[in-house]
Amino acid sequence: MPQINIFDTTLRDGEQSPGVNLNQLEKLEIAKQLERFGVDIMEAGFPASSQGDFEGVRNIARTIKNASVTGLARATTSDIDIAWDALKDAAEPRLHIFLATSPIHMTYKLKKTPEEIVQIAVNMVRYARDKFPHVEWSAEDASRSDKDFLVKIIEKVIDAGATVINLPDTVGYTTPEEYGALFRYVRENVRNIDQVALSAHCHDDLGMAVANSIAAIQNGATQIEGTINGIGERAGNASLEEVAVALNIRHDKYPFTTNLVLKEIKRTSDLVSKLTGMAVPANKAVVGRNAFAHESGIHQDGVLKNASTYEIITPELVGIQSNNLVLGKHSGRHAFKDKIEQLGYHLSDEKLIEAFKAFKLLTDRKKEVTDDDLFTILTDIQTDM
Ligand code: KIV
Ligand code: ZN
Image (cartoon, rainbow, N blue to C red):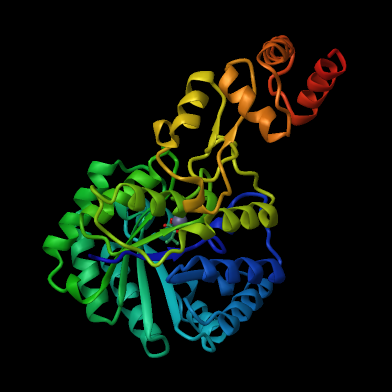
């Protein structure tokens, strides 16, 4: 079965989330957890961006043994030299060079002609390959670039020595159909594409980063880039845990494997949230606090009879101990009885009805009934005996 390489950029694109600033120790702690999670490649930072980031990348490069460590560089010799200094001690050093290829970026940001862009890309990839065994070249804003221009420049950078070609949806503008078609076009038209890995890098401005990443896989991508908890520039990047779990759960539709250790998902998510200070939304897929919580009586009753009635992912798969039946105004007697028995109370049928009534009255005043609330209700009922 084809394997998809996982390229984690939590420590680079993820750190570009407004308000996030990780120190070197924090970066190293996250890098070690990413290694346990089983990512194939981790982008540790952008060494030329600051002395702190340079040192952070160098620390990670010297420590991580079971993943390839990479750093970002603009298409300049000085960025590449600085990145080499930071990465040269890595077990498998890799460079990630980017250069925009869309008319918007070439005209307004870079102020260069397409021919000049091709020349810079080729020269810088060649320069980088004199040092690095692996060089990824990213066509920034690929999803808004001319497809035939992409074919031309990709063929040339592969001839110059690139080992990975990345087609980012830099501004999160594309749709799954379009992004899939782009990958298919590149696979079918770039003469030397089989010599390299082909990568997808999606942003979530329209909430389609995960769907776009999966469309890319279905159309020939062999590598997916993303972040833990989907953090990143603006609306963030594709959430790696969501891509990984979707591939796992919908194996019937997506027959691909990864090296990820899914039971490390929760721990990784918690650590990234704690150190970046970015809270995970309660309803976020896979790792949100409510992802395995059930509030309505009908759902709770179903889950107590058989969890598969309302759960497509087992909590254990992603390293969560168990699901959670939240007691609120929609909860029924079945979940209530189950909960109080867990707390050590075994009531007669009559007392149970009484306690359930008291609980229902409370739910009109309180959104969520906690264990402490239940203790109060049950103590009242018992002292009443
Ligand atoms: O989104 C993007 O285009 C990037 C590049 C640097 C690859 O993050
Ligand atoms: Zn990005």
